Image (cartoon, rainbow, N blue to C red; front, side, top):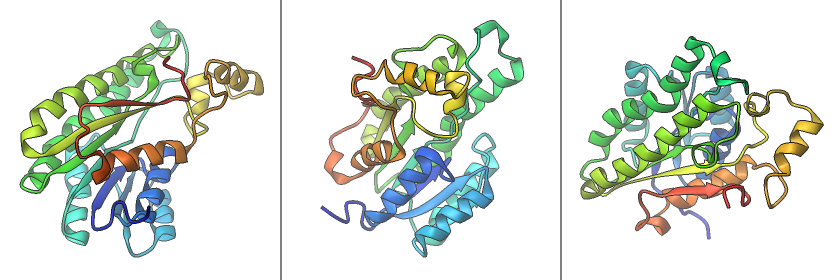
Length: 249
């Protein structure tokens, strides 16, 4: 099946690399017009340039309301609508005892993983009213089955999951569906933070906790997001979808 997002406009944060880049490319393959948003402006330009005319890059700090407003306005100005918002940008402290995490790291975690969802919702909902839409957040298995050493990150992802379910109930009358993804650790730029150090031994340790025996990939997460964003999932809302190779069983 091709063209599953034909005619839809998506904004994806954290889209210059990792899961977000995978989503941007996969959504475009299925016909979506994509706003590639990231703090890394050069990376966003690279991804949007690879996709072509159906994508536009914008540098955005998801913790700054003015940047968020400009990011979503780019969808309207360039493509005329907003159908899909993916809150994918994330931040983590390095795996360490909870009492060793600096206050500035704690504040940044909550700003990127929690406040950014609040800010994007304030700006996106008025743009989706009257036409409906889909909001997807990249949460984590950390919000369901926490690993030690990541306490404050785990808590932020639990917040994202609860926010998703509450938003789904409140926004259902507006025909705005709200779901989140719960990936297991993936081979992305944040992996070394989750593990504490990126060594073959640590990778093997993490993989041993996943029944299907491997880390997640950007394509795994992109395909799950694609389904949630598509009309095939029109009756799905308030779901925390585990994309985890069985990790949460």
